[in-house]
Amino acid sequence: IGGHAQPQTGVMKPAGVKTVLAVGSGKGGVGKSTVSSNLAVALARAGKRVGLLDADIHGPSQPRMFGLTKRPASPDGKTIIPLRAHGVTVMSIGSMLAEDKAVVWRGPMLMGALQQMMMQVDWGDLDVLIVDLPPGTGDVQLSLCQKSEVAGAIVVSTPQDVALLDARKALDAFATLKTPVLGLIENMAVFTCPHCGKDSHIFGHGGVAAEAEKLGVPLLAQLPIDLETRVAGDAGTPVAAGDGDMARAYAQLADRLIK
Ligand code: ADP
Figure 1 (cartoon, helix red, strand yellow):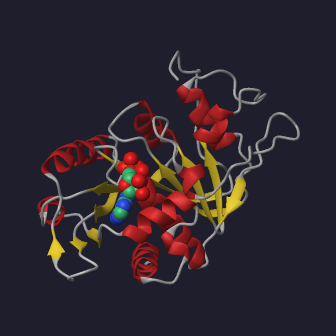
Figure 2: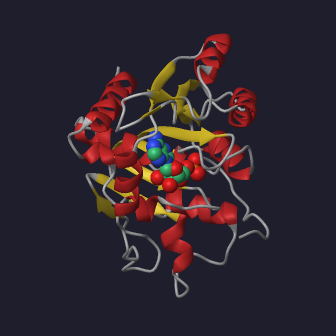
Figure 3: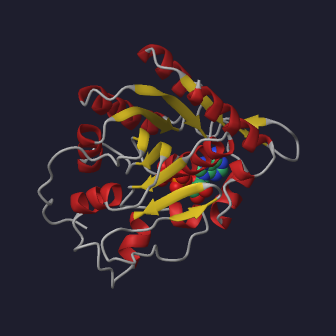
């Protein structure tokens, strides 16, 4: 990954896509990809036509989270037919980079790859395309927000100070790029012991809520540290595809965003 960006012109938003939604974070490892995958599944279960573009080049986890092991096909060598799982159309730079014989993706050029994942993938008609961004405030965020008419961004953070510190930077970057922030999601907010039922605030308490209030943006959800979420993600069946508490929590989040 690296090298020179390909020259890019014009809009980078597929014709059939109504709304592009970006999911970002300041730090890595806070659950941005987990939230992206589950939100995508919950929106699909709510009847929306949903795509998920995994643009997290340093840690493309969506193939794993959706249980996708195949390479997307490209019958004409130009257009990629994306894979589908759990009602979501998924394209990941992970699938792309693992394909060393790819004819479509010319070289490891990040911006060109982003452009191709947006414009050379047959996304079809989608109500919403969720983009799982890399953490931080780099080239991908800049390009996407400037060229893809991103309707709104969601920022995921844990309550931990170091995560919040970087989340603030991500929020500031979206403000600079004039991308509306739809709200914050506090992930890993609390751990409830399955044995004694006691709550532990492993990463701190209340930080994301306070930040949301300070900035005047909604706190969209507070999600617990949850074993099932982690296991389901690793197994390729997002927890939102099930029927437990977390599936309900993600359904609520999807509802909030639809309204
Ligand atoms: P990011 O995209 O921010 O780097 P991930 O979504 O890949 O973060 O999550 C990092 C790890 O934490 C993964 O192993 C994931 O399964 C786990 N994880 C994320 N959110 C939760 C949660 N609410 N409860 C338990 N594990 C979680």
